Length: 456
Length: 157
Ligand SMILES: [Zn+2]
Image (tube, rainbow over all chains, first blue to last red; front, side, top):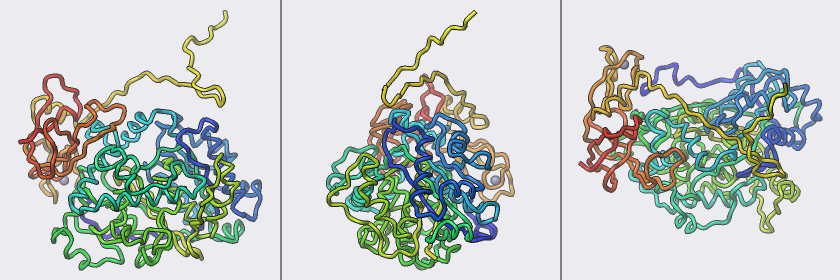
């Protein structure tokens, strides 16, 4: 669609306010032979219910649940159709109703959106969202093939059987149009892997230098291995409730002010140009000079219309005027360094063509204006695809509740996963954050959700 | 009469914790449906695109990959030959392709811009070094076609 009608841009509305009360994770690993998928989901649910200072015991909590949402990206990976039914039963939620949501990399975000819709409509008042992915059943090469099955099998998958290659094509074009120094991109990989260094959940933490990233081996030019996300096994759980139930469960509920979705063509090839959809912090004047006046050549290959659409709806729904000012923490879907820069522009952290300034200005850092991916993100911590969007919101929830240290700094959390808390561990708890945002993203931008949580 | 135990065993990859290997041996039957004409066209060195046949349709641009039905009005589309000379819109060389890739690692992938076509077809460069704006022409694998999108490639024009 390249021309919007009045119904297309209607701002979504919740009939009842939606709250988030608790979150739980597993650690994330390349291989996890010690635990099967049912067990990983149980472990994440147990953390959510037993370690989030809830005012009810697990048994009482179980009696409060009335709907469940499951989040898994690819049946290919798990090799188990209807895995949700097996997990739902394993978690002891039979015979409650449930759905399993699937929107590629954005599955986690979409699952939370589906749970929010259930709460907002009054259909349910206490809903766990359970996300997972098991990516260790096949070799990395086959895994890349499976992921590339989420490109168009008729016209694109055969060209590489590798998602990094499809992103690389966009990256090259973005670089041709914007010439972002590779050093800036490398800084994103360095930042997120450093954040992961402080997380007991992280799969690929490390103290790297920009030089390390630049010298790293190339997957598909210009992307190096260190600039690409991990492939993980693990689970994540987020518990949503209506206002009354939220207060029965916790003294620290956080409101889900908005969660909205956008989409764009699965094939990047099919992206037709249109005028830029403006966010609340942009005007026609913002783009007077963009592309030397070729303002209508958008979104092309270098912008994610789905992300812009999701942000447009969510910002208007939550009353966001300027994301860098209004958000205190942000989690992006940093599958690749360059797609992260593209996203900064799509969600209005900087105007199109200037996304790199969000990094170069220092804004994205822990002590910057909008600390981004304090969790370690997809590059440093995890990408167990179905769990990813859920994981992001769990980390934002803990930030808003002031619980970063509880879950990342307790030495027992590290020993639980067979790790040792680093001697130079540092707290990444943001200073009294009020509002957080998370972007969940699929394909080469086929589905994106934008979620905004706020402390009451 | 007792029934025999199965003879095909699953290999044990690890004993503690127990991990076994499940083999899979089958193929998928891939139906191109209304898009098959495009792949048959490649065998005849034709680059077949589609255009909406609805006179009232606002867009009516040429689609490649082709669509049998118009995304703007859902009307049937007509097959039209697309130009076989275009320019490289973007490119990347894939060093580590996934398992099913049939071309050599190091193959340059390209997106091609063609005059009058509203999409930017993803393909590969069979010869030469890719560059932005480079003029390329289509070549076709007619000798032993794979009947996939790989039967189309581009070389410097
Ligand atoms: Zn039409």
